Every structure is written in structure tokens, then in C-alpha cells.
Amino acid sequence: MSKCEQCIVREFSSLKALTKDELLKISDCKTSHIIKKGEVIFEEGENVNGIYCIKDGICKLTKLSANGKDHIVKLVTKGELLGQRSMISEEPVNLSAVALEDMQVCFIPKTEVMGFFDKNNQFSMNVMKSICGDLRDADDHMVNLAQKTVKERLAEVLLYLHDTFGKNEDNSLKVQLSRDELASMIGTATESCIRLLSDFKKLELIELSGKKIVLKDISKLKKISRTV
Amino acid sequence: MSKCEQCIVREFSSLKALTKDELLKISDCKTSHIIKKGEVIFEEGENVNGIYCIKDGICKLTKLSANGKDHIVKLVTKGELLGQRSMISEEPVNLSAVALEDMQVCFIPKTEVMGFFDKNNQFSMNVMKSICGDLRDADDHMVNLAQKTVKERLAEVLLYLHDTFGKNEDNSLKVQLSRDELASMIGTATESCIRLLSDFKKLELIELSGKKIVLKDISKLKKISRTV
DNA sequence: ACATTTATATGACAAATATCATTTTTTTAA
DNA sequence: TTAAAAAAATGATATTTGTCATATAAATGT
Image (cartoon, rainbow over all chains, first blue to last red; front, top):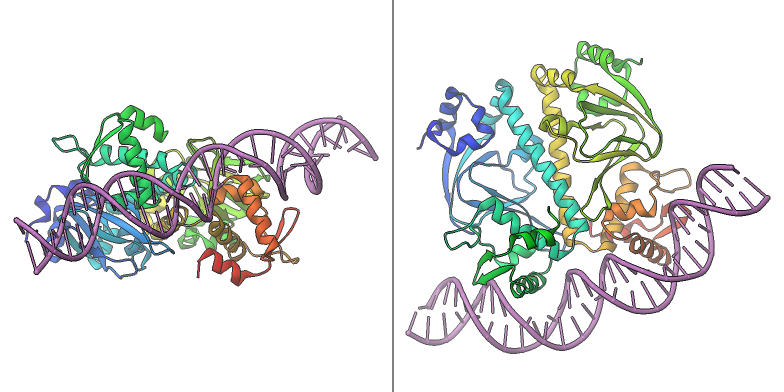
């Protein structure tokens, strides 16, 4: 079992406030997991008795809507934690987590984490801040969904993927989502999403080859998204 | 200046975890304010150096969208706190707060509150839980905006207003929102909102007289909203 | 009490988006 | 490697929603 003390991604999460002693305690009780692309880490409604620390990979957090479609609420990547909200609320998780690529995650039991809350103020402050950041993002997201057109939202999501997760050597977006997944981030029908991608391609804003998407005219995309 | 110790609404917020001593300290440094209907408590982008505790009244939290329209993110009422998120994030507030009716609020400076975070674990846990609840609500809200029709969302908001804020003796909803405000909760054009209200009236699901709205057929509204 | 402003309501139409059907392309697995 | 399945793409069309114009009702200030 690998040592948390030597784990680099820890530095990017709330866990960075933990002392060496605390990290050793985690090392002892954590469990490491390999999650294959498409596999579920946890499902909406489940009781997850702890948090997951993402060592590598990206996953989507989805929520089932009344019409049976999944909506992607958020993408989470290495260095971030999963399940903090439901642990604190003492509720089942309200979102499902599904791997978008092969992942390495570590599970830390609730009992351990809750102990740190009491003893390590910096740690609980970090967790609070990260949840507060999520809340701000959620507010922004809400207003976008309420007020922007599908086209604007598609442009915005493409830019978000570009800025947050970067691109491969061939300039294509690193995170590869299916059209269906893209649509469910934007909150639209798959066909509408595909159509708009085709439009963007015709306007030479993007390039499409298979699942790969290359952003060709970022400033025009920004204009369309009204993100500036 | 009134004593926090004797204030009843405190019992409904995270502040209920505070000790008598802590409450006395707050009584000394807090400032009480009367806010008239329509007045602004704080505005998006402002630095609010503390939190507001709502003693009486209701306000809306709004966010300006890219097209210049306000979107109502949340309604907040007596017993609840305002400004916790931005205080913890150490950021300007991301939402504006505007009174929907005459309000009484108390302002507690940041320095004071932050002190409690360190010393009173139950208090910080309460704040965390309340923010976590907001985050869960925001997720739900997002998925609704993304996947439900305007009609469904209108029905849902009417039921929400009914269930959360209750009704007057004449059965009309206690919170009176303008059509414009209703539309900006739902995320639609004012005209669309008005039209759908007229439809609901024709279907005898609601009754309209001026700004007053009476829910006549709650179970049908529930079916429409797909809330069940 | 009346004029003026503001909010609500409705019609006509345009634009955006969803749905269903079908074809083409890509992926998967035997 | 090829057949079957899944995903992507596109057309045709229906539905939803927004916009603009205008009318009516309600609220406000003088």
C-alpha cells in the first residue's frame, strides 16, 4: 500500500493541511482502488461512508432527472475529493460518480476524516472552502442554464473543457466525452448537441474527427459563449 | 439593542450551537437593521465583512446573467444566515440580496464569527451542514433547469412557495412575487410565465386575483411538476 | 381624483429546441 | 475479419419558448 505522505496529488486537495502523523494514520486505514473507464465509483442514493481522493483520472458526477436522463453536474479530476458533501450532511450521496477514463482512487473512512475535523482547523477550513467554491460554481451554472441558449452553453462547455483539462499533442481536448455526455452537461437533446457541433465545424470554430474535438477559434467561441 | 440570547430565530440557524458567553459577545458587536421591501441588503461583487442573521422577513438572492437579467437563485427567510459562503471563501458575495418584504436583520462582523469557527466545533459543523444543504439544493435546481420544461418548473415553484412559506387566511401564497420575479425564479421570459399562469387558471389548478395566487389543485400541480 | 407610470395580459409571429425516422460511421465482440 | 451493435449525423417536422406589439388593469404620486 502506497504512503499518503509521498502522494503528490494530496497537495492539491483539502488534505494538504494534514500533519505527517495524520497522513500516516490515513495510510493505514485507506484502501486503494483501480476504476476502469465507465465503472461506477458510487451511485446516487448510496451511503458512502467516507471520501474518495482521486489520485489519477477524471470522473463525471451525474444526477438522474425526472425524465430518466442523466445530467452531468460536474467533472472531477485528480487531486480532488469526492463525497465530502454527503459525509458532512450525513446523507446518502446525491450524485453518481462514473469514471470517464481509468482512475486510481483512495477511499478514506468517515471515522478517520471526522476526527481530523475536530483536531485540525486548517483541514476543516479547507474542506469548507472547497464546498463553498462548489456552491459558487453551482450558482453560476444555474444562471447559465436558466438564461443562456444551448449554443452559448455548448461554446462555454467546450472552453471549460479546454481551460480545465487541457489538450493532447494533436490539440484535441484531453477529456473525450460522447455527444450524449456533452449534451447532458449542456442540458439539451443529443441531436441538438450534434447539430450545433456541426454548425461550429462549418463556421470553422472547431474541428471534429471521431470523438476528438479541436478548438480552432477560441476568441469567437468566447464571444458566442458570452463568457468574456 | 436587543439580546441575541433572547432571540428566538437564532434557534433555527447555525448559531444555535453558540454558548451563552458567545451570544453575549455577539450582542455587543452586532448591528440591527430594518430593511424596507425592495431595498438591497448587499449587492453581487460587494465585500460583506460578516454575516446577516434574518430576524424577520424574506429576501431573494439574485445573480445577474450575461444578458442583463436577474436570476433568482434562492429565497431566504427568518432564522437563516446570509453571506456565510463568501465569508468562508474570502471572496466578494456572488449574489445580491433584496428584501421581498420589510425585514429585520442583524449583522455580525466577520472577525467575531471566525473566532467561533476555531473554538466551537459544533458551530462550524452547523455552518458546514447548512452550506452542504445549499449545495444539494443547487444541484437539484440545476438538473431541473436543464431537464424540465417551463411548465413543469412553474408548477414546481408554486408548490415550493406553498410548502416553504405557507399561505394567508384567504389561502393565497404568503410570498407575493411579481410575474417578473416568478419568471426569473423559473428561468423564462415574463410573458411565458404569465401565459402559463393563465393556462393553469383555465385548467382550474390555481386562482389569480391581482398578485395573489391560490393553489386549487395541488395533486395535479404535483403531477405536472413531476415532483412526486 | 386624476394623470402617469408600471405591471399584467394577450395576440401574432419568429426562433430555438425536441422528437422521430433514417442513414452513415464507428466501435465492439464473436 | 466480419457481423452486430452502438454512436454520430442528418432530414423532416412538431412543440416549446421568446420577442415584439398592443391592450388592459393596477399602482403611484401629485
